[in-house]
Length: 462
Image (cartoon, rainbow, N blue to C red; front, side, top):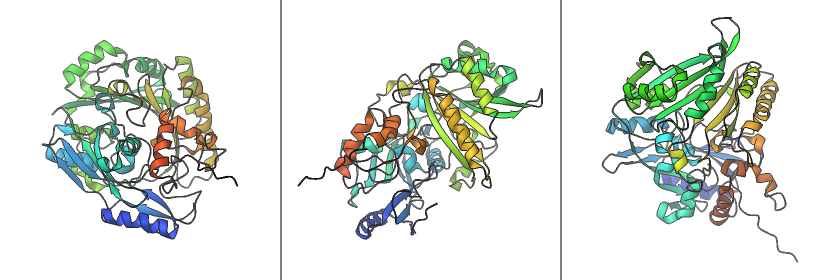
C-alpha cells in the first residue's frame, strides 16, 4: 500500500481551510477521510498521485440536536451511532433514516446517499439534508446559500472526495413511533429458502411502507444433514406494533410464516442496536463508543434488480455460494418513498422501478495468502448475475466503491470511456455532476481514482 507523507487531524473548521490552502501551495495531493466505510481505501491511499497526505476528520464530531426545529447539525466525523444516540437523548419519537452499521462516519456516508432500515418510509439520509457547510477548493467555507443549489445538489449523493470537504450536515429529523417491532426469521435451502426468496422479491418492495424486510444470505452447516447449506435471514423493522404487523404479513407474505413469538416490540433506538447486531439487553450508550474495532479483509460488489430473479437462477446462486469460504449477499428492498422521489432530485438515481439492491461480499482472514481465489470467485458471481441485474447501464452503488468498474484517466480522448463507472453509479446524473465539478473545481484539486472528473481543458493549437 502506498503510504501518505503525513496525516493531519484538524480540531476545528478553520484547520480544514488551512489544510486545503497549504496542500495546494506545497503541491501535495490530499485524501480526505471522515469515517470507516471506504471499500477501496481511496480516502487514505493514492494509487495515482504522489506525494499525498491524509486529512483525518475523526476529531470533528460535534452534534447539535434541535427538536423544536425538527433538525440537527452534525459534524462530519461523528458516527451514525452517535447521531442516533444524541437524537434519542432529546426525544424517543424522533430518528434519522441513515445506515444500519453504527460505526460509519456521517460525512462520507451521506455524500453517497446513506440508506438504512427506514428508506422505504423516509428515503435516504441524503434526501433529508437541509443545509451543509463545506470547504471548497479555494479554502473557503460555504453554506447552502453561498455554494448555490447545483453544488448543494451534487454533494447529496454524488460521492465523497470530488467537490469539497464536508464540515457539517444539517439534517431533518423524522418521526418514529414510541413502539416499533423487529424480527429475524431464518430459512435454509431445506426449508424452501429459494421459494420464499422468490416470493420476497414480489412482496418486499410493494408491502406497507412502514415495513422493511432485508435478507442476508450466507452459508451454514445444516442441522438436518450436517452438510453446508444456504441460510437466508429475513431481518425486519416495522414502524408500529406487532398486532398490525402480523395482520399485514398474513395477507401479503404468509409464506414466511411469521408468528407473534418471532416478534419483539421495542423502542426505535433499541431497534438500531438490534439491526446492528447487538444483544437485546445492550444499553444505547454503546453507540457512543465510536469506531468499530473489527478488522477483516473483503471484496464487495453491488447490483440493482429491476426484475424478479427466477427460482432456477437462485439455485445457481446457491451452488456458487457453497464454493466460497465466507460469502454473504444482502438484498435490500426498495419501493415506498424510494419510488416517489425523482431520479434527478439528488445524484442518487436508483429510484422508481428498482425492486431491491444487491450487495455481494466475500470475507477472508487478514493472514490469508491466496487472496486471488476470493477475488476470482466474486467476479465470477457478479458475471453470473448479469442477466438478472439492471442494464444499460448495469447500476452500482457509489458507497460500495468497486475499482473493477474502472478508474479515472485524466485526458481528453479517454474521458468518457474511462468514466463508464460514473454512469453505473449515477446514470444520467453523471454528466450533470461533471458540469458542477467543472465549475467549482476545474483544476481537479479534489480527486481520486473514481472522483467526478471535470471536463478536459482543451489545449490551444499553435
